[in-house]
Image (cartoon, rainbow, N blue to C red; front, top):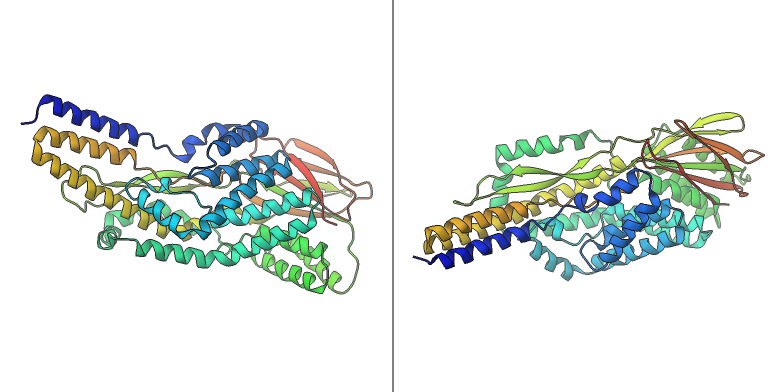
Length: 465
């Protein structure tokens, strides 16, 4: 029989394991302080905290997500150059991950015995598209039209690559599944299927645009090439982008007006003075954690369960903005729902999430079984401590990957009005009314951001032509 000293050593080891396991915190827990500042409209405070976190995490697995949050907050604070600097740091990391398959394989193996939140955040497809879209907007507000063209071309490239990349990721996840028989058995279990169907049925109710398409990015592309055209090929490019946008937002009257303008430009007619209002409202979906039981696949395992991410849609937002100009009122209209963009990306990623989570859960279950069996053969008390330790460790590490870009808006809406002779417009949302003097351009952009129904409107401008 083992001595009490040996038993105490095992108990101490168990406590250490539990301590390590409970060190795993979700992204929402890490983001809590910044999110509170952001939600209350304290943009400078959010910028400061996101910046500190981004700098601290710059060489970690979470470097990209914190850079994206910081960059978006900087843009909201109208620090456009600093915002692009942060976006470029995120982009540099994303491109390195895209080019380095060996790094990915190494991290995948490490995450197998912990959780998917321990994998490097490489940037989702809509992250990449919005990163380059925001860079282009920052370029416009900095007056650098040439750089905006480069970033808009990058948006197109991200969209082009997205479908192929996701298919390759799914194939890779299936190829790396050494427990294929067990994972397939788990997915066929009726209780498991019922839980999964209940957790994700809402995804089918969200309108989708098509794989990895963001209509706002396409619309910005159309506006840019329509107003900075160097020749007929640029105008044709703009016309095709407008056609794509119209297919996603058929009821948006402002897109129809743009198409009429496009016809006039192609016929050689000059552009009339126009002001566009781009309204970002609300917050994009966040991820919350749900627990789904995995059927017992290995005998005598103390704990077999899995944490999965689920989208949570944010519904505290200003539904529309009223724009008053030339003695008339116009209301902004939807051009892109980030709920739809994020939900479609999530649906595309879900088979990979399920496969990886099942593989990881089963691997940990098999390892726990081996530890428990070996400990029980030595001594019943040692076996008991081993079971407690493996159960607690697996429970502590049972954390879903909840990392997602939280400072994106819920919706992008647009409005266009003839620029008034006095260049005066008024923006209204609820009790808030903001007078704006439009810039001196032939084509002006007014950007309005509303974080939620309680936050102040943030207004900035750019000249497109």
